[in-house]
Length: 248
Image (cartoon, rainbow, N blue to C red; front, side, top):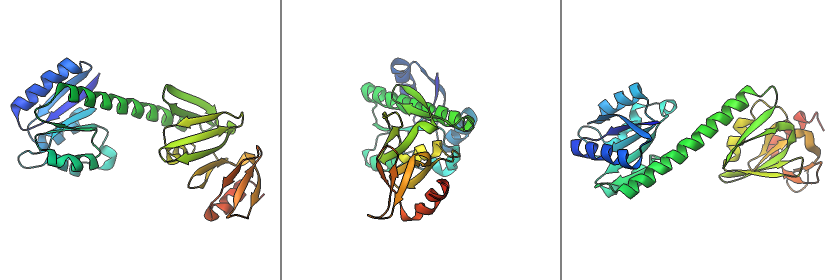
């Protein structure tokens, strides 16, 4: 069960949203509803909800001011805005909200928004599970990679290199297999932190130094791998890469 908090100054709006959630999302539990932002902030700190339904126009404070009350490290909940005013949509999405629902609420739009929350929550759970595994397994040098259907566990020594392309990363293994994860290269870099033979050599590449056969200075500098692939290396990364290779 996931816990939900409603912040809205209109009693009827809170009551209606509760009823709609009971119908379309029985796996969500409304743990409290609040009629202004300060009481909502207190409830968030006390009850630790997974999801907050947040009105924007309320007396005293706007819902868009919610994050002014929290440090970034404290924000472990998701937000769906509910408002009668469409002009706030752009600000709401800059706020990184899951969705922006216009009043009067539509059951189909609410159902879709809740489903987006579930998907984000599931991805977050996979992310945390992978991070926890990688933190605990650095001595054994295994890596947990979140994938669409679960988590893939691989030995760090099996990684040749990884190439990031926007929000996705291709991971090339010594077996010839290529894995695709829907995470950027910075995410993978955080997973392998502390594994000495895996390091970032370029804005688009992470390399396993065990498989470097040569460093070539021409064409801006690149690394040759034992499987014949060439991987770019940034000028400011050359020294650290060569040091990790034992000066080769």
